[in-house]
Amino acid sequence: MGKADDLSRYSRQIFIEEIGLEGQKKIIASKVLVIGAGGLGSPVIQYLSAAGVGMLGVADFDLVELHNLNRQIIHTENSVGISKVKSAEKFVQNLNHQVKFVAIEEKINESNAENILSTYDVIIDGSDNFSTRYLVNDTCVKLNKTLVYGSILGFSGQIAVFNHNGSKNLRDIFPEPPFEEDLPDCDSLGVLGTLPGIIGSMMALQALKIITSLPVYLNQLTLVDTMNWRFQTIDF
Image (cartoon, rainbow, N blue to C red; front, side, top):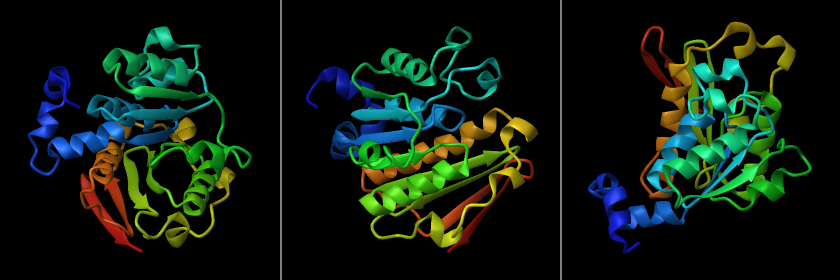
């Protein structure tokens, strides 16, 4: 780094013994892909850009809608009708101009997944459907990429780190995706806006720990029940 403004900006991270200057250098040199700029992606994008991630790719093909604003906190009323990726880019530019933002305004599919994911060190999946989750997982396994996984519904969320240093992946705990039509979703059952903030912040924290070579729990799914304020871990 070497710049006084960098030291000032990131000083509260550098002061942490486990991070230090070397850890901050790792953050600045890192390349992270966030899939989805919605409820989970918003806090992930917010905290990773604030932390100084060097290159932040964001993939999403949706437009911002009014009903997104209760939870997708990087977007504003002025963002309604424009692409979530463009809105996310504006947010990041206003927060930290040092972050190289890579806008990916397309849906992750079988034809482009490998090409898009191959550039990045850590993949963070904030998508809202199982077909994308399994495609991203399988591509990370093929490319040997670390995947930070999260999902939310109502008052409940899940988080895990997959395929990190030889650890297990999504198919080791859920071998096959369920039928989408049989599942509840946020469109039908809703989600309290603060829940993705909690789960997304946990995902961002895991990503920063991975980047700075701090230990993370592997082969473990964390279940978060915010209605009853219970946290449970399942080993697999």
